[in-house]
Length: 171
Image 1 (tube, rainbow, N blue to C red):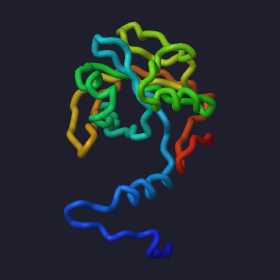
Image 2 (cartoon, rainbow, N blue to C red):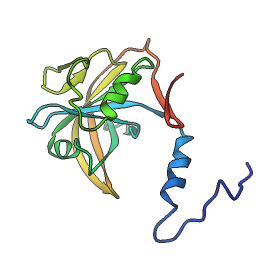
Image 3 (cartoon, rainbow, N blue to C red):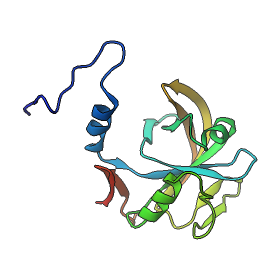
């Protein structure tokens, strides 16, 4: 691979690369799309994320990131549990709904229900993970949520929704 002046920016030892270069690099990195839902007792909240990662097999741990300036953060900070909803390739509208601020994301046409333990879960998703939140780790303007997977469901017939270069795609 050839590195050109337009594709490389020297990092400052104190600040790192410019935000636009950081965003540009990650626009070319495909990521699965999920909606994280939770309820800390004040009603359901949810947000679209592409930061889900598996951390450990034993115990089964995952992580995701959430911005501390988002409307969902105060709820997730207080929640003991959460659900990761894996979106199918045909669920771009749902991803957009949960990425939009200032709206009731759980209002119609969003279809959802509660799991037996009380967590909100979206209907017709490609799968979900029910999580017990174990740790919140400060990371710049975000928090990394580390959670233990305690239950799961997966529809293996569904193709996942992925995000690449500022748009949703299917495989």
